[in-house]
Image (cartoon, rainbow, N blue to C red; front, side, top):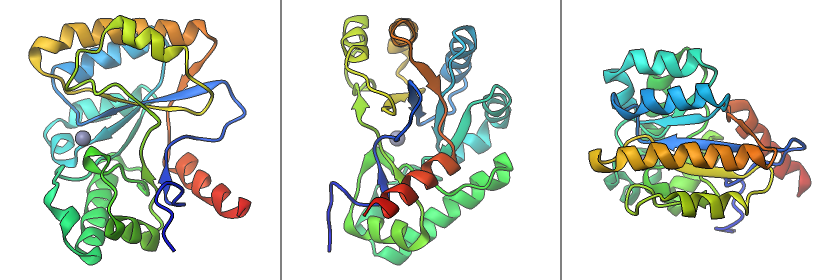
Length: 220
Ligand SMILES: [Zn+2]
């Protein structure tokens, strides 16, 4: 049986009793933007999750260490951000998932057991691979298409008014050069709006995401 929208191994938000949301940054680490995002998070006492591309993480180990040192989480957004594997079989996808997690595990020293697919693509073989390996596929329930459209303060403020506890927000800490200033300005505004509404920005972890998958299992 195949319930695409309610697949157990696909996580789009977290069940939580806390007034918290989860900001996630994809596609880094970026030597220019990631440190500036980290500065802003530190200044506003917010935490976040960085879904890194393994090859970029290897190229910038010092940024990876800083992310971890400052209390954020580092999770896998694949080794290489490839798209062509989606069209191969389940076994190629399993190898890809395992390689991606192992590489990041070696680099972070943290056991990795979750995965965010490039572009959030879900195909039946990927879901099957994730299910067999018991690897939650982590998506989001808020996004701004911030690499394609200008992320304006107005859009950020409107979105902040719609948040509920446990929401997962997708952002990117890799932006075109001409968009970086606007991105950081808007991120500041978004953090302010979110915090004024009494939300804590918390980081995800492998265990939070694994629990989410277990809870769904028990509630069925
Ligand atoms: Zn990506």
